[in-house]
Length: 127
Image (cartoon, rainbow, N blue to C red; front, side):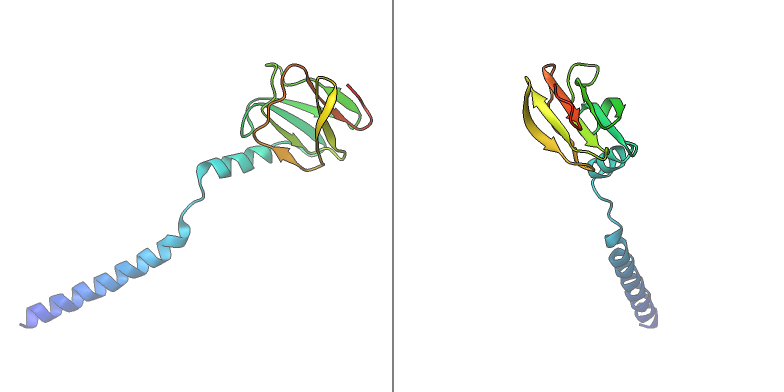
């Protein structure tokens, strides 16, 4: 009986220790990879720049533009799918010459489509 009691005590101690490890491990669950990579990539757009990406979630080729008074066509592939405005001025997004949206300084959009007829204008520039 003495062996059984000691074994039971050892198993109880292991169970308690194991439960403690599980309880401390639970908060260490990582955020989804897509959220982390979106945030990290969006932050790669330097200060005082407008970054136009060919893919959603700030992926693909990037076109980086500096300045505060310009109009730019979509990224080199003919379509911009995500955008980061780190300029000091708002960026107006135009489609076929008409403004459709304004992206304020510091804002971004990770899933937008600006096609070949679109333009992004900063400052007082117009398409």
